[in-house]
Length: 296
Image (cartoon, rainbow, N blue to C red; front, side, top):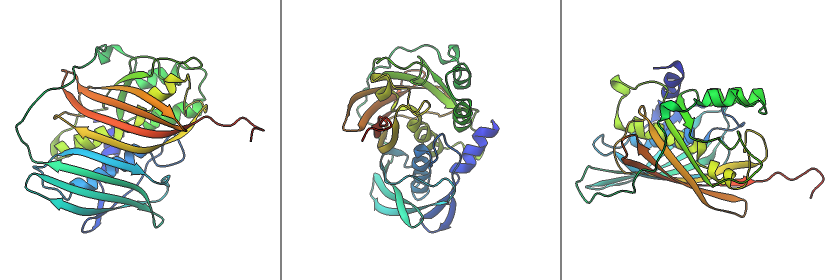
């Protein structure tokens, strides 16, 4: 296991300060606020610690309410909404400086046999044939070296590989609003930490990294790395369909059906390397073009 992955696992290992109340810390991000995927992942950890282990998470729905302060702890309060015979529901509110910054509802279910079908996995190259994220970033001479280092540090726990050029690698002309990324943790998981909830939590963490890329591609924008848009996640929803491992290759197939009113919508499916549909993700975010100087 890499040091970066161990640091991420430590970040997700919340401190319990009271019954149903947990405290987490933050790590550096590309932008000067708490990374949304971190808050979502930590909130899911808090919810999961109040649920029996035989009830894995099957969905989450979340709203990002305020930018998080990376220099302050985050307190997660869990509300035990329902404990049914098959389903368990939890609501989590993340608070900083006395104000809620994030709200999550998560549902957990006991295993059941039932109907089974899925959308086929799209074609994609073998991930080991693709350049690593660090190799791509260091190959772009037009990017600010400081930004490159921030990206590399923020994603060091994850081996994330774009199938095609990311928005910040090739921009200026609109492209198809579709992006594919292969990802896995930067190291294998084992021992006491190797539990189903952790794999779901890690996928939640990564899911917020690239989902709005397809919005940027549709308009030829390079994104946060080059400063031609400003934005933030607004809401995030995930459905966990089938078991998967976050330390094995997962294909994140993403697209944007719409952008309007300063908002962009991304939707995606995540597949295991052997073609099983593991997760569906939908997110809307603020995506604004900065005003030119002197324009009111």
